[in-house]
Image (cartoon, rainbow, N blue to C red; front, side, top):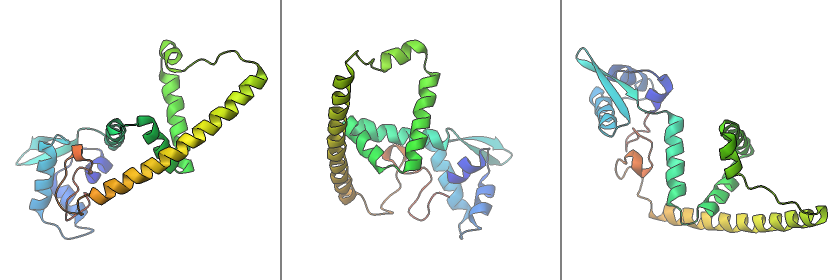
Length: 187
């Protein structure tokens, strides 16, 4: 999938093969089988061209990553804690990118939706407001610390239960990058 996403155009088995052979020895039939499996799983569409097929990604890599994040977040029994733990793992650059993305979504949202989504602050006296902010910051810090601990425990438990690398080929619903196999990394 990496090659198909990188090229962002329909590709043949031969093109992918020649590119992969720059890095390692691989058989034509292996590449053909992986692309056929990706087609059967719905990750690529193909069109006949003579006796061969041209394969094209059904969605972008960004859409695939977003689907994985949404799936993981939705599976959590405490989505808010999962998000706090996730944000805590982000680098400063990732947090800036997240802020930019949130701003874009807010700008794109119709005015009615934005009013419904964003809670409006109540009128308070400045001293009460400062005290409420401090209390809120302390609560948020405590929640974040708890969520990080929970996330670390959950990640440790999941890591202990994970199948050994190469134990089988996982489909997109199982979280592996499409095209990854026990013998390669999907490139």
